[in-house]
Length: 252
Image (cartoon, rainbow, N blue to C red; front, side, top):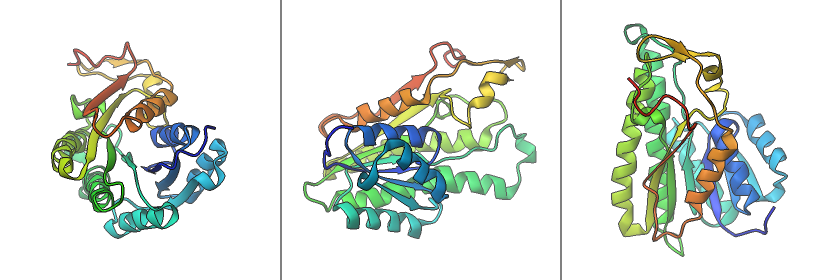
């Protein structure tokens, strides 16, 4: 691990998948990282994997609860004095769900997590970053390939990920006056528990079932690290990292 950089990050959904990969990449580069997620044990597992010790905090957090998100930021500032980066990553989907069969609760849960939860994170990051010295920081929102094109039977996930792109653009504009850079990473087929079904075959737009290629999720972690390490005068507004041969370009 490199020496302590003094830079402080918050990673939501830091106990699994893309969040874990990003946290490991940041910790490996010397960042201090507060890992947030619903369950404490996976967060602690990530910290153990990194050998991070005092460089990391595990903060059980429900991102759908604005008070819990505020407490996450307040706790991070209490521990390390500032927040330089938010990787706004926590999210969920419904799997393959027919539009007409989606229950009210399931729809609301996806919106609360993927859209409302992401906004609570942006709002708290603005509150902290505009007031700290030196001022400013960076927010990276986890969009998705689905922020650009849907898969079959994915309306809840697709709608919220399209909305994330709107959050990113608006927050990027509103953050300028506070030296806050806001960008988005759109990931296609990283090998996580959520995407593992791709290797077994998933529905395509033409109704066929096809196996899709996957990439190592650590590649996504390195992409987040690249974006995080840019100077604040530079911003990657949208960054797509995907399996080279996945059927995304030309989908449909």
